[in-house]
Length: 321
Image (tube, rainbow, N blue to C red; front, side, top):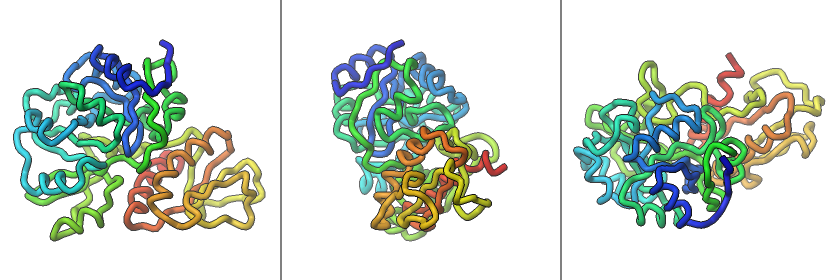
């Protein structure tokens, strides 16, 4: 199969209506989209990504009104957050209706839904009479793509079309929330921080972002978001700074003992939002340089820094154990 990068929304719509896969831009990361009501198309997502079918997908809709037929209930506390943050990088777990195929939810009763905020994707959703199932457009376990060329690196020859919408604004996946014992809980840290949610609630949501048994939703597995190059936290393992074949990623400050060609700074101004937008791109670009090892500085552990540290804990784990 030949994979094409293009900017034609109508081509993407035609392919999606035909049951094909299309990589789509979102405000978070690029997604691998298919008709969420077409089980054959949904199975193609799992095959292209080599994703376990026990790992549920997220459904994307044009509006809250479009979501209603696909869920049995929309509790008021979750609806309040939807009205605050949609369209945007918030995903909500709700009880599914019979319209949602079991392949979407890994046979569970909850379905993950969101209303994204990217002009090209929203234009597509408005012209479809079905939601789009769309996990990140990369091979399973690898770093999520934030540019069309990142998708091409992983999925060239596996999908027909990549819709190029430029670099993703947020650069981190959506935050996933649900209700547990009548309180909002966070199943995946994302582009909306705990502090953002706390400001809208009378409490700080509990984090339930690990899974000992069945994976409830995306992003909960321990080993994930990893480059091919061995990846470690800076200052948490022994490092030879004179070794020219090591790569380094820092938050805002250069290291005096490391050559500029061997490092990337995520945000020279120390802005967490800018760092988040640049994180995956930095890891992907450093991975391409075939260093012996990559080292990354931990981010300040609040706001989007907490989300980035969560991703980095998962991406470095397999190299630390």
